[in-house]
Length: 207
Image (cartoon, helix red, strand yellow):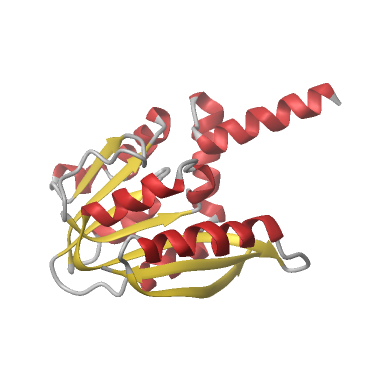
């Protein structure tokens, strides 16, 4: 039992902040696992012209690569807490980085190292579980978003057989109220694809 608890702790830490060879493996595994909701999230951004996109918790950089291919996107910035996973994202996006279209930053979502009103879109896919301090993170997302810009926060709230009451309570009692309190408007909860048996949802809002 002690071994299983230790192993569970190790894996949880790796999903939050991947490191070493195990972290690299998990980063690439998440690319494959999260492809349906990644593409769905990009659709929710409703990209127009001259877009500048920030992804919080960019992982191994799959969404960044898809965004960099879109002519309507001028710049994509990916941020992650993990130095190892940033390395994976750099390798995946090396050509776009050379062209200056993709930038990668190691940092914490609670203290974004960007100027005010810099991005037209701010997105997150499956990183919200690890934010820790929702109020500060939501404030930071609002701060760096341009007027008229869009925020999309994608996560899972259950499986085909089970509703995750804890996650839904987090959405209803914390995330949605904070998004509204920070001045974001047209706040919507959208239901997305079932990926690997998990139900995907997204919080969408505009500044």
